[in-house]
Length: 163
Image (tube, rainbow, N blue to C red):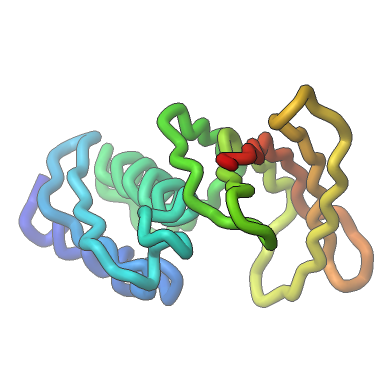
């Protein structure tokens, strides 16, 4: 892998407004491997200052994307995340909800993207469909403004009373 190609990977990070906002930094890369740092920033945290699961998932997405691109130098191609499944095994109950002592955290998030989301607004509909005690499963549909399905997913969320 050439130093020039490391510059190409760095440019991919800088060229994404979202990735730039999250603040990733490419530390190193070799063929098929990358190491990305996500510096602490309060903008990437929950209300309780824990690193938000969305920031973790975005970092996972960026690292996987750049590792794929680092396999070999590819000219004129573009990529898109098609599916993501993130489980928060050590999820902290850090989000206080409405009343004192009631806290929640995401345990799992899944998304499947089946249409390009290029310069498109979307509507996201979620419906709690069941659960057991403090664990709630929700189905999520993501639609274009015109009502076309563009992605679907689900979440598993836990709410506990610490009182």
